[in-house]
Amino acid sequence: RDARSRASLLADQAAATGGRSEASLGPVSPDDLLKAVTKVQAATRGMIVRSRSQLGVLAPRAEADATADALESIRAIQASRHRMEAHMDHLRAKTDHAATRLQAVARGRQARRSLSDMHEKAATLQRAARAWSERRQQLRRLGSRPVVAASEHEIAADAAFAAQGAGDGLRGRAQLAAALR
Image (cartoon, rainbow, N blue to C red; front, side, top):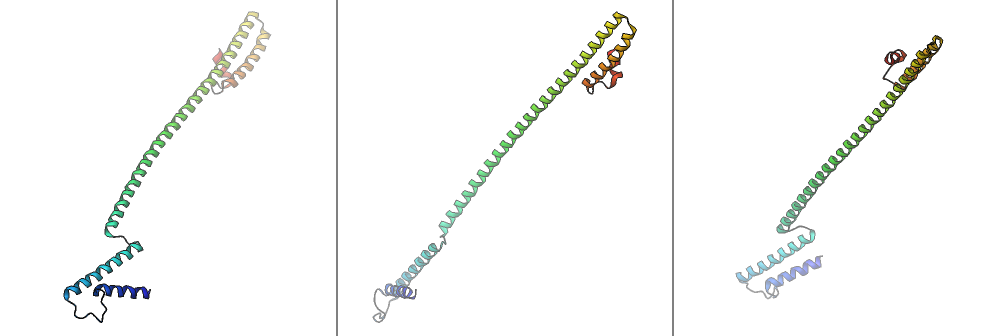
């Protein structure tokens, strides 16, 4: 490194003296001295700029360009983020709509199933009531008292059967018997 510095120094001296050695310099005019100093300063400035660019230090113009590029990148990232958030909001809205629709379908199905159960229970009650009414009419036509007593026992059994089929609709044999009369 010292050899390179010495060679650089000798080259600068040679440029300043116009290629003459120090021994043959003689008197130097102020204009020649100013030219030599300007050349040395220019060479030094060039060397500094080259060393800075090699070290990664940017010139003011390149620094401004890098700042502008960075700001443009930041704006692009912000715009992309905004688009992604808008898309996520759209997807959330679609998901909410789909969930609401599924809930509505499930509630409708449950209501139809409940209605179907009620129809089945009503049909069971109607069957029991018709059977009871038909047996009672048959017994009245026969007019037999012992048969009527047996028939009352059957009526109680039918009422219990109907109460099981009715669920919450009618509670107990007394209510069923009262409803069937």
